[in-house]
Length: 209
Image (cartoon, rainbow, N blue to C red; front, top):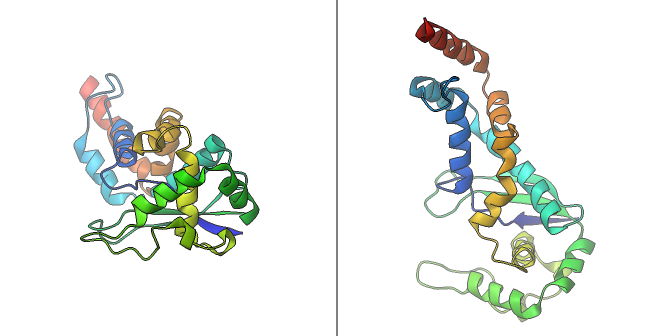
């Protein structure tokens, strides 16, 4: 088995972050109109919720969707790494997959496409020093690559038909709110969620009098 990074734009100022915010807002929206927000309850939820747990559940489902969308056999979520500060990096999703499957993918992508992606991602410039050669020919045998190199291969594979940008990422996750996944993850990660729901019910009952 090999560890790979999975193409992902992270949870900071991204469409994924916005989707989680929208789900959170909907949990305490006015039940009659569905639009009027209770910012006090939202603030309480922000304080009480273990968003790290929400992010991990989101990332695990994202890997499952990515594997299904692109036919990556046996790709399994392994972990989520998040920086203490988002100044220079963002969240990274790690997954496991067999080297046999990676070899299949390597043979499926076009060398020229992979070489161009490697050059664009790993060419040093002002403010960026690459630890990888920008020349694919210098990367050596595929079975000796590391997680970042395998992640670049997955990105190239996902780019085969169209650029796999944040909008393509979002298309993998757009049903997470529709089917209630994000709301459920937030609820599971908030120990006193039932208390907040009772407050919401009380406020709406009082309002209706």
